[in-house]
Image (tube, rainbow, N blue to C red; front, side, top):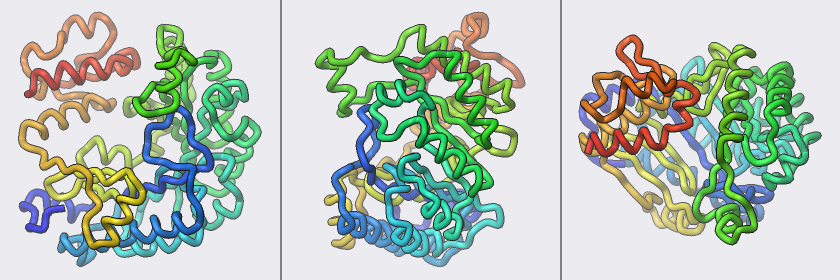
Amino acid sequence: MSARVPPAATAVALRRGGGLYLHLPFCRSVCPYCHFTRTAAHDAGLRGRVAAAMAGEFALRAARCALLREGRVQLRTLYVGGGTPSVLEPRLLGTLLAATAGRLPAAADLEATAEANPESFTAAVADAWRAQGLNRVSLGLQSLDDAVLRRLGRAGNAADNRRALALAARRFPRVAADWIVGPGVRPRSLVAELREAVAAGVGHVSLYILEVHAGTPLAADVAARRARPPGGRALEACYLEAVAALEALGLKQYEVANFARPGQESRHNRAYWRGVPWLGLGPGAHGFWGRRRYANHADLLAYCGAVEEGRLPEDAVDPLAPAQRRLERAVLALRTAAGLPLSLVPAGALPLARGEADGLWRLEDGALRLTPRGFLRLDGLESLLARALR
């Protein structure tokens, strides 16, 4: 975060409010496909040290930003992610929240979310979270099929997932859940699972197609031919059938992987796509504050050591030059249902008429809006825009 006073436009944006993201990297076990900063090698001492460092990081950033230090940034959204936040002792989370979110004035309609894995989401955790002001829970279900969960390498089972789903619906006014479309997933079963979840109280679904990310156990298995790479037309067809089912259930696709009942969209995630400032704290966390984006050290000890020495724990900083801002604005808009304003599409960058004829997007109200089939081609479209906007 820059020590200098941000320009007027940035200061106005910050005064309108921002988000806070807390990254808790602790898991009971590591899923083979996960590429986020996470570890299953931790004890109470390390958990306490990281939580204290995250509180220290907030203090360091506040010392460098008058708006933050003086509490002139209203907290509009809070998101506790990971990792598996439900692994952290509720007492530690309460202390961390008091030292971070508790230092900022909260909006009356603050959206406060925490992620949980079913096997560590207990009634005691749920009650503590509600007492700490969390009002939305996001469950990493991924499936309600034991065979699929085993193939994904998940620690829990379908019974755990259903128990956690029922508990979340009883304790929280808003419940979100994640699903993964991967090998072994059958369209009919997936649609039935989504119907069951929505009937149980889920108002928001994140639907992902399994991907192979470098450095993960899944990537190593694919490279060694111990596993086949996911993908292909069968998975895409399964995804499209699930999208249609969610739409029929009243959950509209408002972002590339996110579906919600009206009013249950994740305001925190929407803020990312709209360029709203957010402060990211924790190992591997990313933030957008002032005129720069930053990424923290992913290594837990490097992260803690930096904070304990009084240094911002940043591993990379992007000052976002004007050309980068233009590209980012276009790419983020493309990921949403509102679409990419045609005024932001350089001439010849995308085959507008052909893409519409092929059913990849609709051209309406001055915007290019991807269809579900178009969202499946998002990476390629982003590459075309990047080349045109260099």
